[in-house]
Length: 248
Image 1: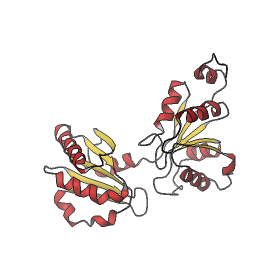
Image 2: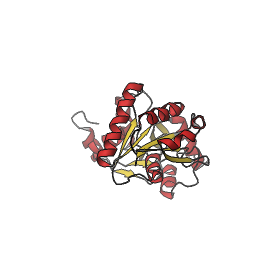
Image 3: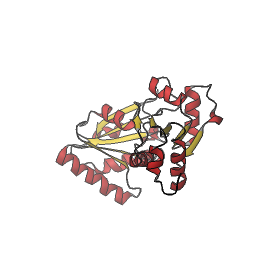
Image 4: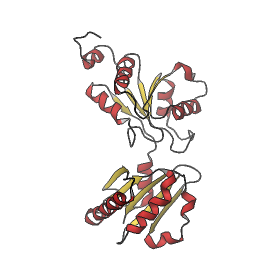
């Protein structure tokens, strides 16, 4: 690239390709319900930005065993990745072909660092092509029966209990004021702690919905008022991926 040339100009004048947002299964290795577009994108892409390299490689191989993984190039958005290295990977490889973006599970750029890649592409006028696939957030909202017209996703809530209680009480206020469904996630080994903390805060007519192992044979969707949760064995949710929803 000429030193007087911006990245955007360089890409613009060199037949640049597209960013393909490739959804991955929520339930591990469940590839039977991926769309034809997703399958075609994987089979025709050589460059990938992924949240988890091991998961991405397993998924690609499950989609098509004939793909030679060693011919593919990956950039992993692992903790503490170098932003300059990411930009260099994008800037050079968009000249060679499409780049696929994958989350560890579900839709890329939703509750994962892939949104940084999408932002970069928009800044440099690169086409962004989102493909249809599963989202644990949307699936949980669908299954909850809560307000699907007005909802908010908060990602991970505060780790320490006092701040967590403050956040939950704030969400309750939002539900009471606007009927806005509140959606959030937690590290699976803290599921019992999260549920018990939520139940200790509920005072009105809010209900808690917990969606466990979405899209897997072991999936459970439980939506109950505070009193109904007394009969539920919370130990059964230990270390199982969950989405939490508060609503009414």
